[in-house]
Image 1 (cartoon, rainbow, N blue to C red):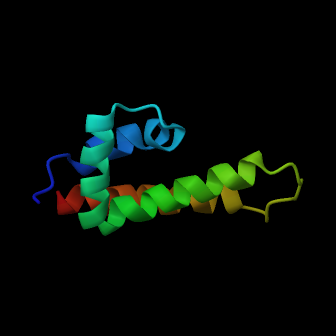
Image 2 (cartoon, one colour):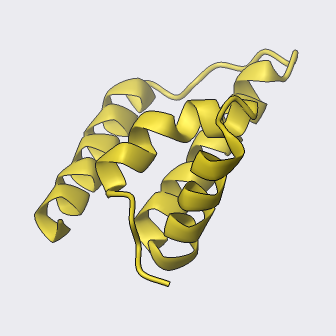
Length: 85
């Protein structure tokens, strides 16, 4: 099966997909894309893991500069995906 959604379209819907707030047709398209796109599958897993950590009631201190490094890394990954499109 050929990928019919772009990475940008999948990124826009990742949150809705995780919340189960997409139509069955869109869910199928996203899942077909995720089966073939390592970058988007990694983004989905990472987003899911962040949501699990945020929802955890335990409190912990992030290492100094973590937020900045995390945003920079996400931007690098998004830029790499854009170059591949």
